[in-house]
Amino acid sequence: MDTANLPRDHPCYIAERIKIPGLFSDETNGCIMREFCAPRAKSYSYILEDKEKIKAKGIRGHVVRNHMTFQDHKRCLFGDPSLEVTTSLSVHSSTNLRPSNPIN
Image 1 (cartoon, rainbow, N blue to C red):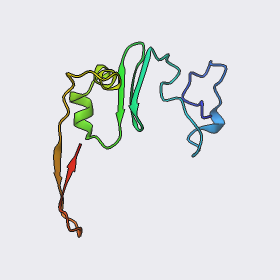
Image 2 (cartoon, one colour; image 1 turned 90 degrees about the horizontal axis):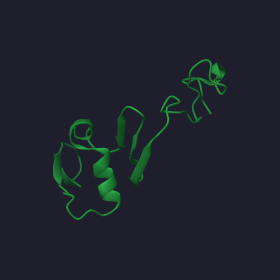
Image 3 (tube, rainbow, N blue to C red; image 1 turned 45 degrees about the horizontal axis):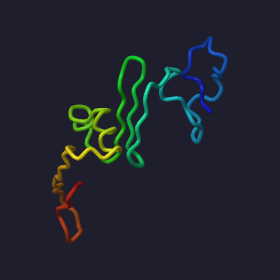
Image 4 (cartoon, rainbow, N blue to C red; image 1 turned 135 degrees about the horizontal axis):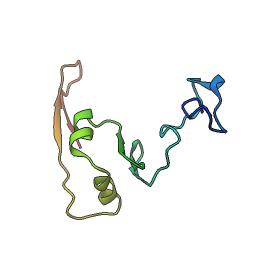
């Protein structure tokens, strides 16, 4: 495990393993998670002591930053019927036969 991003006085701090591919690292930098919610693979969010962090692979960055919250993840996981689901359309040029792909 790569623990180089922990404080130097932490008992688990080891500087020799910094940025070695294949090792796990602590993305919270030693902070304690208050809540964690993962409704599906590659989509999760958590609350630290002072901030909220959202990761959603395949979702545009501005949507994650401006429109998604931890509460949205939690409502999705526990099946809130008032949750809105939208579909957008991605149009791009390619050699495929279908130039537009719906995104859910």
